[in-house]
Image (cartoon, rainbow over all chains, first blue to last red; front, side, top):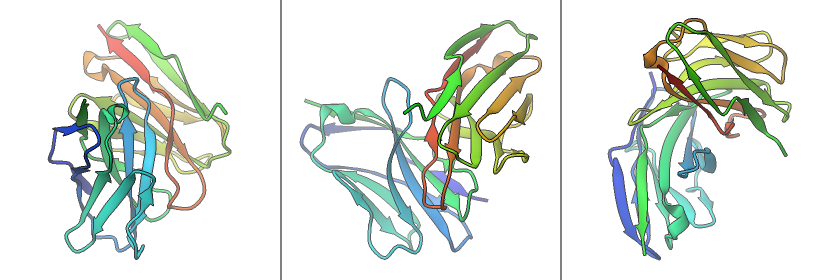
Length: 114
Length: 113
């Protein structure tokens, strides 16, 4: 069975600083994908970044990067130059190969302080 | 650019009442999903439909039924609502290869009294 663990229920970061949100996963499948979503207080789920298990390089999307350590089964999200608008819940999720549904972690609430 | 549309956005029910949550996507996606979100629990899968004509149970299917009406629409039915089903319900869809993300609707906030 797949499992996603996010050990930080809440995090604080100063504006303009970088922050790392932790995510570890457990799967026996050799092929899988890891996703991060942002959920602001308005409630919608916003896709941020994707990492495939066979990708050689860490994924990056603007200020978001994914620190993928396959041997440790971790897929931490790094947000650089935090902004007040980054305050939100962040969810890590995993999918086995194909069209299987995403399995989500319990999330980390990030608060950016001015 | 509608994406995934859920109706209604809010609903209050009494215990024992029935209700159908509607979901439609206009992205020609094959796969559709229903999740519930409870505080501190993340999103948990209720049911999903990998393609038109198929449905499968997820992690928390008890008390729910689904219908994949056509490629666009995937509804979730509560036959006899219980207070434990008070939650925010999200519908999602996905198309293309395995590296494509799921696209979510804005959610339905459901309260069962």
